[in-house]
Each structure stands twice: as structure tokens, then as C-alpha cells.
Length: 635
Ligand code: WTA
Image (cartoon, rainbow, N blue to C red):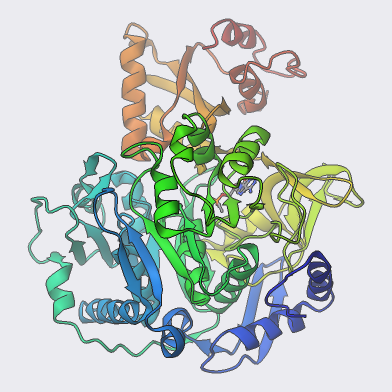
């Protein structure tokens, strides 16, 4: 039996049991046998979940890029590490071998060094899905700089908030990006963001779209000439196990985004291990995850997990509907993709289109299909299973979070029998618990509650950058000695988990987590707006869409509602990005509030979802009359 590669259900249960009975021994064996260390650890795990403090492989020294690149050079230097599929379907795909990746990462790392970046410095990466994005992430890791990738769909304001929160010294970007038949002026967004960032000394710019851009003297430089002059060798910085590898921001239900900090050794071991098992990766497989590296899925399962296993990983620059809705399947056929990992929102959008787009292509290379980001509805699951997997390819419904670093609950394909909408069983090392309203753990099966994890795992985020108190408060205060996920879940009679969705004020729109508070803050900046509340409502493709209830100031009441709606969405786009735009905006005279002044979102959620048969007790409201009024005018 191998702990590292589970091949049957029986083996899964054995491995799982071992991982719970002796977690330290379990992870130690995996770390020892499958990764490269400059110095062995003194202690596998120490933790106190109430502080919370967690430390894995303490005393160990390593560099993650040696694990993801250097060690493969002896045996598979000419193997393709990354296949880059450009936005334009007539443009040739680029195959980057492990040898070439080594060279590109080392050169890039030397450029970073020559620009004054050192171990521990934060570098913001705001790039489209082009090879330089993966290369720059690895280049930071090579020299111990902490990367903070910001999804290149975020606005200038959102980018500035993230740059300032962790004091980035440098920004890596491109002149622009291709997205379907559009181009986006990324450098312009960076320029605007940097008007409010004093700490950034250097901006390095990739030439992607050949556009005329302004280069600020003394700050901005084109990347290519610097790379041309850089040395090909770059000794890796030797890192301590717990040194931060990266920061990645995620939305909270309140306040500014949370910079989740991930460690080096634990993150590497866990993403490597879970990639191998959840995708049953074998040496010659071609693996494609359609996420953007700007999200955790891209960090863990486009870059680090696959490369730690010496895999071939595909990066796609474009969108699913350009030049038409067959693009994904064209790519699957062209590169003979074996594992395909995407989001339910993409599946729902693809399922709405004519099946001709699927049937035109040969999908017989596919072995495993994956989904992530939100609960997958049954209809979408069946469409995926029937039409893409031809009922032959198991679907891995993987539940996890930016905070967890890697996949937590998921079938092991070909071992765990799947059921639509169930993420099924916890991976080895993961100990879930469901909690009831009184904070007690629900034991036994056929129960629903709030999902917690009761034992540390190697890839858990260690803190929120600059705000450990918030880390503790958000994740470790609801239930003592447990990590609280913010999700609700049920466990069926066989012990399978089904994730039912967020139980806090985070709304998942097309797989993107959006906190209600930052959106409300943005809306409230509109001079005609007095107050607002956002809730999610069911949407056929996006899963959830946003519904805003807005109270106008007297001065705004005479304005055209259509214009106000446009302006409000414009402000949201500027503050956060187009992903946070509202689908519906209802103007109202009041919002239902408790006597202590809190907005009763539960009621608004029901009204927005047109599910008003049982509104619950409204008698405790300060202003029960507004409920009727809102219901009458619902959109
Ligand atoms: C949701 C994405 C149901 C969940 C990796 C979680 C899911 C949030 C699933 C994290 C799934 C993710 N089934 N819900 N398979 N996967 N979620 O941080 O609510 O972008 O808390 O990480 O997405 O989103 P994040």
C-alpha cells in the first residue's frame, strides 16, 4: 500500500484511518518519500488552534521551486511542463519544457534580484493568463519573495487596496490582455491604482498586446530587455518550512479583503499530495484546469500541485465562448486532455448551448472531470457526466477554500463511488465536523450543520497578513479548537458530505466569492444613495446573482431609476470590478431592521429569491411595514 497514491476504496479507508490515528507519522512519510529537502524537520507538527498557531515540518529547509522544477530536470528535462494555449484560436500553442521553465524562472528571478527584491519582500503580480504569470510566481518563490497575485479582472481601486495592504514594493503587469475579441488595458489600471500606492518603486511590464502605453520614468520598465541580460543560473533561496510562500486575498463578509498567508513546506506537501490523488495523475497525462492563477485554484492546481508532481499543466489565456462555445472542447481534443477541472458556473453556461459544440470534438482522451468553487446542481452534474464524460469519467466534486490551500473533501476517482452534488469523503488527514446551533458537534449520519475542521492539515493558511486577530476571530472563535469554514453541509447515511453553501454574508457569483459589505460600501458612495443592502438570489448560470435594495436620499428621488442603476453598477465596477455588478436593483423606502438596527438579510434573501411563503417571524422587526412594501415592488 502506498500512502502517496491511493488506488482503491479499501486503500482509501486504510490510509484515512492511519492519517487520523497518527497524523504526524502519516504526513512525515509523505513528506519524506515524495519531496526534496535541504534539511530535514525537527518536529512534524505543533499547534494550538485557539491561538491559533500551527507549524508543520518545523526546522526543515527547502525551496519549493527545487521541488517543482530542478529535481525533474534529471529525468524529464525535455518533458512539457506547461502548455500555453493563447486566446486566439489560430495562434500556436506554446510548449514549455521543464528545462525551459528552469531557465525562464531563473532568469526572471535574477531580474527580480537586480531590481532590489529580496527574501520576504512582497511582489504584486497583476497579469493575464500568459506564461509570465506562472514564471513570475515561481521566480518569486525561487528567491523567497512573497507573491501576491491579484486577479487581472479586479479594478484599480481593488488592486490598490491589495497592494497597500501588504506593502508591495513591485508590480508585475503587462501592457494589456486579450480576452475573447476584446483587449483590456491592464497597464492603465495599474497606473491608476499606483496613484494611491506610495510603496511601489518598480513596475515591470510584459509586452503582450503591443499597445502604446505610458511608461513612467524611473518606475516602469519593459521586462524583456531585462530578461535578455539576465543570467541563466539562480541559486534557490533556502527557506524555512514556515516562511510565507504567498499572500492571496479573499473576500470577507465584512471590511477589507483578507490577505491569506500560506506557508512553504506544508502547502507544498499538501497540494502535491492532493493533486496526485484527486486527479490520479500518471506520468504521461495532460492536465487542464480552466481557473485563473489569480485564484487559489490556479495557485494550487495549475502551478504548484501539478509541477511538484512533474506533470504537464495547461494554461489557457482565453474564454469559453471565443471564437464560439466549442473552444474548451476544441482544446481538449487538440491537447488530448486527460483531466479537466472547471467550475459549475462554466458548466451551466456551456450546457445552455447547442450540443453540436460538444459533439464536433473528440473527447475520448478525458479520464477524470473535476468541479470546484460552489455547489454543483444536479442538472449541471448530469450534463457534464453524460456529454463530456460520456458516463465513463468520474466527476470529482472538490470542496475547499482559499484558506484551506488545497482540496479537502473530494472523491478519489475510480475508488470513491460518486453521487451528484456530493463532495463525498474527506481526503486523508482531513477531519471534518458538523456543528449544531448550540455549538455542539453533531455525531452520526444524516445530519446537517456548520462545517468545521477539527485537526490541522499542512496547507491551512497560517494567518491574515497584518491581522492575526482577525484570523482568529473569523475562523477560530465560533467553535473552540476548530477551524470554521463559513459553509453549511450535510452528512448522509453513508457519511458522504454535501456542501450546501455559505452561512455568512459571502455570496458566490459565478464561482467568485463576494462579500456584501464592500459592495454596499461602494454603493453608498453614490451621492444619491442613503443606504443599501445586498443579497444573493438564484441564477441559472451564475449560481447566485446579486440583488441590491437601495434607499435614496431625498435629493436622489427625482432622478431616473435606470440612470441610477447604471451609475451604481459603474461605482461597483470601479471599486471592485465587473464581477460584483448587481443584476437587480430595487429602490425602496426602508430596509427591514432588528431593534438593534441590524438589517435582516434573511428576509431580503427570501424576497429576492421569490420565496416568501414562509418569511419567519417579522414581529421582532423595528419596522415590519417595510416588508410588505418591498414585496409589492420586487423585481
Ligand atoms: C465554495 C475555491 C460546494 C464554498 C477553491 C467555499 C464549494 C468557497 C465547492 C471557497 C464545492 C468551493 N461544493 N461549494 N465543491 N468548492 N465551494 O476561497 O462555499 O474561492 O467556502 O476557494 O467556495 O471559495 P474560494
